[in-house]
Image 1: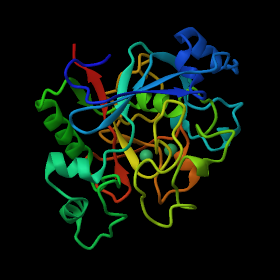
Image 2 (image 1 turned 90 degrees about the horizontal axis):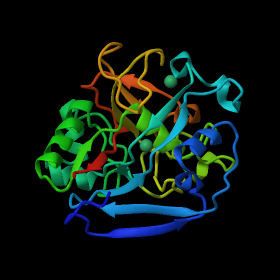
Image 3 (image 1 turned 60 degrees about the vertical axis):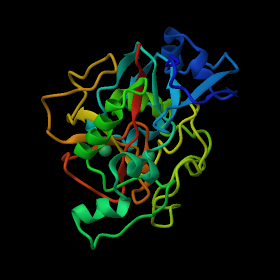
Image 4 (image 1 turned 30 degrees about the vertical axis):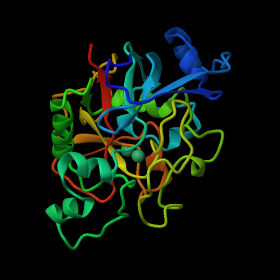
Length: 291
Ligand SMILES: [Ca+2]
Ligand SMILES: [Ca+2]
């Protein structure tokens, strides 16, 4: 999966917590039923694309999307998280190690986060400014324009938004609990309204999940490709984006600095019209290596 002539840096990180990575797909599925993590270690592969975006490789596997009734967080689940269904990710993919930052946005789009805010309403407040802060006040359509511009550079990857299934698979990183931080505290991994101090934070300050991804829980919401549907009845089982039907809203995942912790759950889903901007909504990209 290493694109020719495009990888500026290839880092192999031995990770004792990344047991899910080493398991073949049928074992990944078994883990969702409480199977143990017999493989002690694996390699998390990260690359920095010419775009400057750091990417982590997420391997193929299977997982249960949604929240089973027997899980501790089932009281927080909502009907749109049902029915729980098995999703098979047949092809691995790269995904942003971090949310897209304000520096990356400016480099591609020529706009600061404050300029993004001004497009909505200059009186709206900023939620943290600086190169390493996640960009926000970016609507779904503009995220697509960012991706279009990256793809026009033909830098060895095809960029896109994650599908909702890919996002949840990447967020869980083998976890079946409400948060990928468990059994540890959510505070180790995410920013939400109890610990954020009322603003977003530079990306990557908390602990990553077992795939090596930061801020999947909290900081800013992340746009996904899918149209929002009110349940998973009829949802794709191959990890592809669910387009058409349902609502014209687009899905957002992961919660944010100004929401309560229930919204940071791996399974939680929200949606907004694609023209919506907020100081708590950003995104990260998926990148598939071009052959
Ligand atoms: Ca996030
Ligand atoms: Ca929800």
